[in-house]
Image (cartoon, rainbow, N blue to C red; front, top):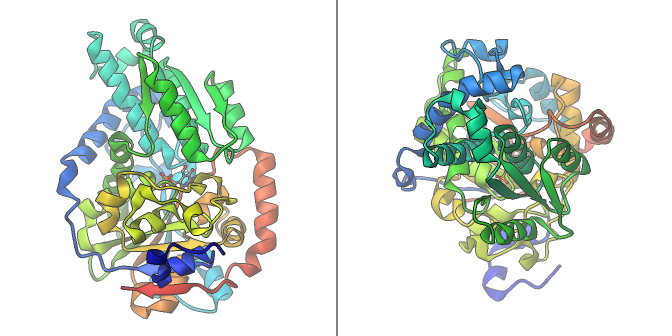
Length: 451
Ligand SMILES: Cc1ncc(COP(=O)(O)O)c(C=O)c1O
């Protein structure tokens, strides 16, 4: 283990993280201070998605009708909705009770962002939103009616868009979301991919006509390269995953939708029946935006827990030390490498920790073995196939339940963040590996710290 700088070595939580051991930090989050700062970004992002619904419905026929599992929550929607189902997961809960040898009082639910339309991950929420916001700005700048969805299918808009480029750095899924949507709107697009990005994600993007630039380094390097290339070019928009309010706003819309989904399912979320949400975390943008939205919607009745791989706890480290993007996991001797490719991030977002940090109720790290095993459990119990990153939160309700009995009541919502686009052969390999590890899912003890 690397020697920790003196000021960090006195912190037992950092020592636990640095050892690579699964670590949990549960916090009391009294403050709502960050909430007003972003004004109405969530509502205006929701309105933007509504404006584009008819464009999605015609451009991506798979979104043309509202799927049965969403229809009762969104009776007024015709189609073109980028949303995923909210489902109870009694079979997974039963299996995990067996595997852990302990009950949780509440109910396990899953948020199925693994099957969000068009790009199959939570990144569709933020990524699509930023591309749509840029499209509206470009339309307005060129005298096209930005609020007319039909305008985006016009020859005039395609000609304008072809003259503009969208650039992003990504571990994979953000690139897929931005790339696919940009290409459909007619923009030129370049995605800078880190070494962790899966080959099939690059191939899929190239098939959509998106330029893929491969980097041998990690995610931070890919983002830097993307930023530098965009600075040099005039008609170029850089999607800055380290610092973007537009991505953030897009993710936050999930909360408004979730409120309708719980209501339609007849589940009241309040202090008697609180909601605990387990969010896989990479740079922190996705879980940060969702947390902001959920706190706006459910207030103190919701608690959000960010879950990261043991070797890549970027947000955990940034918030715990207060150094945010000024510290990386390598600074405490961790590798940053993980089987959860979407979460392979060594340094957190510049803006999520400082603003949303106080709203995060807990952080947890999980070893790769547990992340992989989660793929097996979800397949065997719920028939749900996801990519490894998506399972990060699955075991945390049990970990927290063992720590403090009171945390186990209410609704435990595990946010499944990616999977639908995974090709069949990769999926089979994830499953094989995951099913072989199921019995080990509960074997790793976690250090738990509460304040
Ligand atoms: C499947 C999946 N889950 C979770 C995340 C984490 O999102 P963020 O990096 O915004 O924290 C990502 C990021 O790419 C992802 O691909």
